[in-house]
Length: 307
Image (cartoon, rainbow, N blue to C red):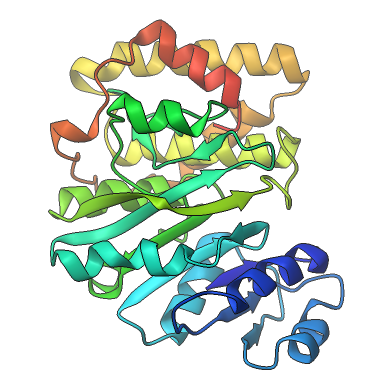
């Protein structure tokens, strides 16, 4: 399932790679009110792809949930339109679901065009700040590291449909960014495991829609962070000081580097969106990478800067 907003040349490459997969599958493209000819071109170039044309641009979570609901397979795979999968990607990514009934999600090894790691699952520090931990490093580093991770990154992720349906899929309050991370938290809290498949390899261009470290990207990442902080009660109890201190430092640094308040405004919007909602269950302790301390967390956050 792919949600796309314009940039048809990227979508065409993504669909071309999917057409060469070694296992049978069904492709659903949710066109999120693209400003170009994505709908018409997809229907002409890829007649076997089911196209859902939305009359307005929806948040990523809403568009993705709609596409997932339109499918019927036991496994849901979501891809960004700027992801190019190796021919055996789907075959390898889906194998863990057949091997164990407790696997609720699976993450492949997603690399950048330069061959460095984009993500091999997501990890979190004690305050539930999200990190693609080995981003920018050689794949060999990831495979030797004993990575602490618990969820796939939404650029290329697989989910057991029964687990997805039980939890209601992605939280549609997120405008973009961190909804994949938050679903991973809920899956872990519900007892589902995540598999990490280094033989499932895909290339991710990255931030092709919003632009890396753009104002919109940093606002959306800030929204997700503010929402998670409030929904998971991270500004209360023993984690309050570290949570608030980290956010203050990251927001000030981002404002200085970017010369705007997009990340701070996003956090306030996310915090406000969580008002009045019931708190969510914290995930089990093994989800957290306890080796990420206060200073390292700030370093990771500022290097990513989208959250």
